[in-house]
Image (cartoon, rainbow, N blue to C red; front, side):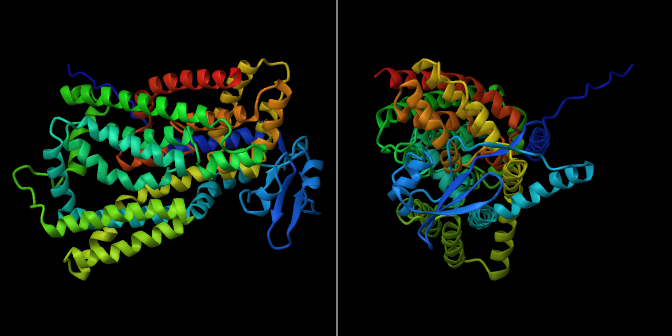
Length: 509
């Protein structure tokens, strides 16, 4: 008798995971009451405050500190006028429940189908950046520069491969804590993954070094203008308040992530079968080390060195532009498109071959671009369903009788929940700080505890939230979400305990 093969469950792709989340969030919009806070915004052209009440009516007020005090927004006026706070700020105690729109099956279906399409429109700047990066990587791969460089680096780091994990994680962590390096790291995967595979590790190690570095850095942001500065300004405190706690979290958290990653990496190196993605070993090596034949490695010529130097310098320019010149994806994409034209000269390819390789490289990252757009659709459904403010209003209640340490722990978990639904750090800051910061006064703790809880909570959930960047990162190396969860869950527990303890220390000192 022939034995029947057992059907093996295959975890769904990133696209399906996001679509499932879309459906769940859409369902929540019919369960959770709709509601909004009134929002206050400074208009640079008229130099007036505009206040939109929950029903959509807009009023104008003179831009003075007295008006801010009147609405209970405990923020200095100059933070609005100098552009530090540019997004609408929620006004405390202004939440109103709103009637839900009548719906039917047809409207529900069209809402579900429209969200990912609108998400693609709203994410076009990031998508363009990803596709241009993919095109450049395709061209460089064709020149053999990556293969020659990887081989040279592998020879130099023989026996010291763990230092690659340390260096990459620490550098990206520093980028995260200073200017919120996150989406920019998408460009690093095609470079780092082959290096780690050639060193005997697996692709999860590369994801860990890059993504954990970015996540722990943004979680323990020190001078990050997109989270620390905006949140502190909106809470009405100086952004240096609580800096010591965040530096402590940065040092301890980064060290934990490095040790955790190295421990896993060395285990995989000793026995490849212990890899969580061992079943994909041949597939991933074929994808990232296709041209890496030890018996036929291209020479590391001056031309190939120049190509890699140009590529590396472009990242230095990108980091400087983001940090010092206020660049965003439009400018970053322009930079790399310019680099593509420079590489066209150094690659010595014909026009048709260069275009073909650039298009093929961009096509390799098309799936990543689609993932980013789909994830944005979750936020669109929440915004249209008017449930973000309701969740915030519900979670902010019932804290007046808590002790300081219990309060800080509670706020940490509140921001973990909010961070799942609101992936934008600046968006969550201006929405929640005017509501949450006064709660610290009620309980009797410093407001910087709220800012730190916001950073720790949202940063921690970014390790796994499908509405953030993790699914796009996993798509870069064709690793499924369940494998990442299995890898990172013990680390999340450890980091959570450390975060709660540090928050408790912040309350007591």
